[in-house]
View 1 (cartoon, one colour):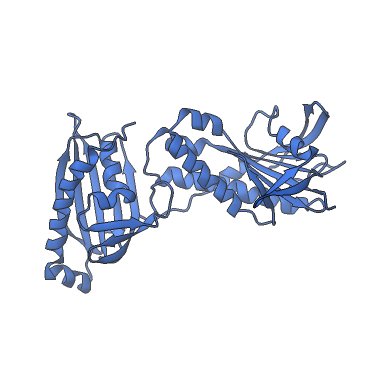
View 2: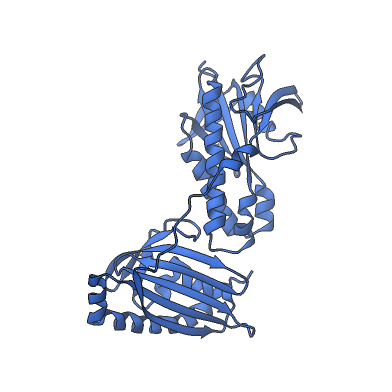
Length: 356
């Protein structure tokens, strides 16, 4: 069995259209996150041979796998994939076409058993063999839907795959190649999406806080550009007077739940994005400073003359320690720092263009 094994290819459908029609940088980062997610969902000891743009070539030498275990692996990857997309669609900050359409990406899985061998090129383990070609040919077929699990007859000779669940229905087909027809069975996976629920992130509660101050400033720019300038953690040190640097942003693209380490003049703290809402005329988002125990709300409002109003409301906990700290001058320092920062923001937005 040294040269026989399982080939397992999860393939993200819609990738080519996604890249061609949308923002290339954000689509690249979204696909990168999804591929890493699929790798993290590997629980059956699959090895990685290659990452092929929108797909991953997994393999495992040895006897044909137990089909129930193989289904659970397919299910785990499929559900993790769609749970991530549902979460991103619910909590994403960005309104570009790539981010808005990401939720429409789909996943299919091709599984095949055959002969192949491996060889090393520096630290890469490459696969070669006729069945490697067969597995890739199966990615192109006449199945109309884009979310399915395909199993070749070499993986289950003379058998029909099990049902695994009550809703699962198998169909037979084949793929014509220059070396003959490749028979296979397939079943749709879309039913799994009905039970996938994104993990909800509770919004920040204001019942135990009090408003420390509120500041409003008008900017000669569109709402999207101002939002990215003010909300992007990576740009924070360029306008916030009290921020020296920001590192360890927890996500490739901004969303509720992301966090970063913020180095301020008075020491390091962690900032966490805690809420976000978007309409055509208004954007609001909030973040929590774990050191200063403050929650800052940013409200952007689009004006008819192409200008945008930004209001910043800072809330502090009502507990005695927080009140004592603000009573000793922290409130005045933070408010003065924010006023300087809002003036700095005028210069930053001149360098940016995020209008969609």
